[in-house]
Length: 114
Image (cartoon, rainbow, N blue to C red; front, side):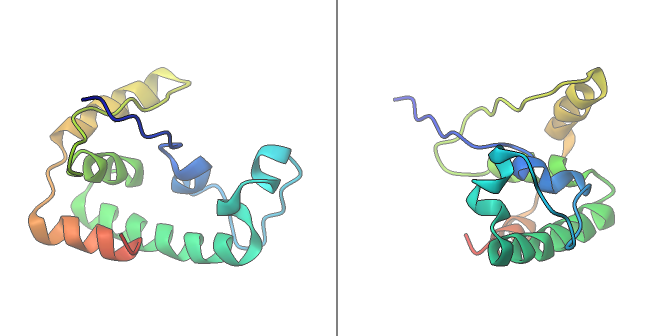
């Protein structure tokens, strides 16, 4: 059985750290995205800050933790992250070296209430 889950692996850009709480969006893709609606957006920024701190303590990138966590999910055998630049491809591949303990998996799950 193949299960397809469509998601934007970098949380629609939130995991990159380029957005702030005062950010305004004028592109329709973000204006219409529930992740970027005001209250949800502020909540998601707080979650991403927690994940960034977690990743920093682990010595890896925030997106790598997110991808490594996805690989721990039941029935997920492979992920196909997007990349626009060669450094993003390298970072995605290095995710395979990120190992999360059971406690770390639970910690990330708790951050996002999953």
